[in-house]
Amino acid sequence: MKFSHEIVINRPMAIILGLLGDPRHVVHWHGGLKSYTPLSGVSGEPGATARLAYEVDGKSFELLETVITNRLPQEHTATYEMKGMVNTITSRYLSESVTSTRMVTVNEFKFAGMMRIVGALTGGALRAQSLRQIESFKAYAERADGDASLST
Image 1 (cartoon, rainbow, N blue to C red):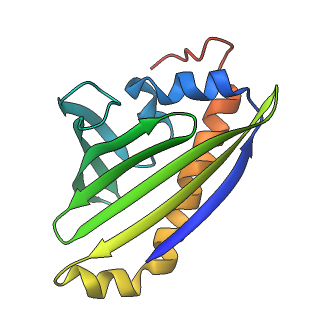
Image 2: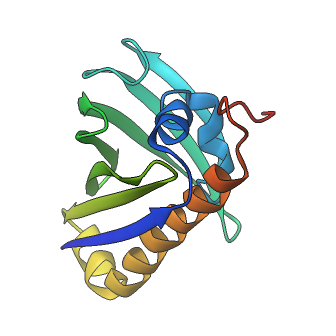
């Protein structure tokens, strides 16, 4: 399953890139994220891995993040894996003006085993969750101050 979303964020590209470049900010826009733990490599660089622990609707789960490419603002690609599922997200950032940035994300989900059934039943929910996440990033980024440093 593959889909994309676009959103315009009313903040300059420099602020957007500052927020994306600092993993301490991730908990502010990933709904249900309890912790982000770097595991290997240089955070944000290709090959870097991290564990993301979530609690959503009373259920806990973890994803393994692996950065594939980091050529911001042109492209950032990472995979998010758990047993039976791999989600590849490619994000691009385009300067709309000196005060706004367009964010384009492409999500591709691949399911294996029993997760194929879950994937088939939850496609709409996955699309909606992806949209909520970028809307949450937009809201967070639009509150950020000029040096992209909000308290964590």
